Length: 68
Image 1 (cartoon, rainbow, N blue to C red):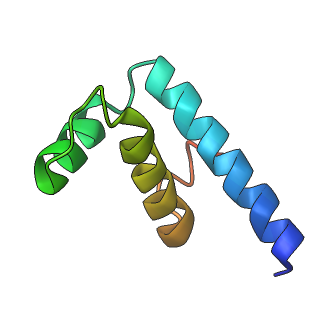
Image 2 (cartoon, helix red, strand yellow):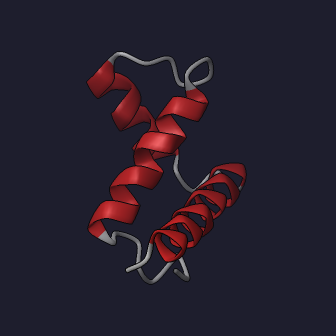
């Protein structure tokens, strides 16, 4: 895949993660990442969402939820 394609796919993934977070669909994942890495659920929210998006992007998780 080209770098531009990868960048577009990453952007789509991260935007969908932000939407899912606003809908409250990621609370269990956020709590897990927070506890696992010693991050604060609110103060470190951006870092946690980035981590979740990265895992989904790299491992094609939630493929039915995210249209990438």
